[in-house]
Length: 366
Image (cartoon, rainbow, N blue to C red):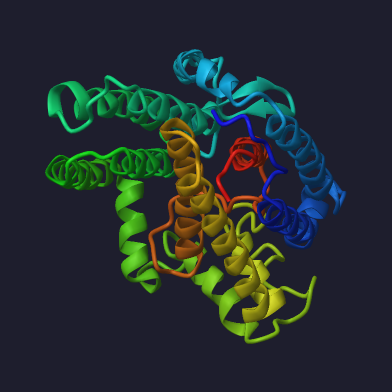
């Protein structure tokens, strides 16, 4: 690691803080009606989002100033620990069941989602593995396959919960890392084809996933059932126009769009702030991806480059899928929008990942 240190990337910090500010405001706006009806407090979700945002920012700046060698040292123990958590969460009576998925560990109001932490642990582990001087990823049996096996094992445990959305982000990020590490295209293409076949099989194995696909193709076929969410989301986005209805003036958040402060927060943002508000958020994500790739390209070593690539890819994939879902371009997957959607584990983990990216940016050749 280059000993020449600079300040963390100011553009990344600015983009993140702006996204967080927009997120806290929109969580309040999107959840106030629902929170009042359910908890008698319109600030119920906003206060918790602000708390997790503050914790995440603290951890982000803390990690941005740590010795970057620690990430390399913790990569393997961190992955093992996350695998243990993914096994523990599947134990009935231990893992918390929410919305049909046993994805949470915790007591009372405090809970974590182990699959979220696995995403960052997998990035660090694969980057460490692929950056070893003796590792030859171009060889199928001793290079390409071992990394793929670890990725597949994590995906299998996540699917047992089941959580196809998080599993998709994990695998997508892994594919980007394998590509960036220099895998042969014929190996990568073969895996993608196999993955597509497996993805189709997973959809066919679960009736509710088939319903999501049919609802994606024609939501009006079942407007009160499988197609309800996407229809209500489009009802929110459509009237937004150029400037939107105004902050706090959404109609769909009033118990029409289910839990609008989580997966479908972008719909409410588009309804209230219009094309300009939605476009601003997309531009901020684009800036974040640009600066992340800049860190990866200018990194002083392969490990740092792959970690920066993986973190950037993880955020990009999740944002693209979420925005695609709420706008009707993709089937509903249950993936949150980074930095904006309500959720403690997801928000904290993503800010920790950005902290790692900021740490690496201090050593980037500029």
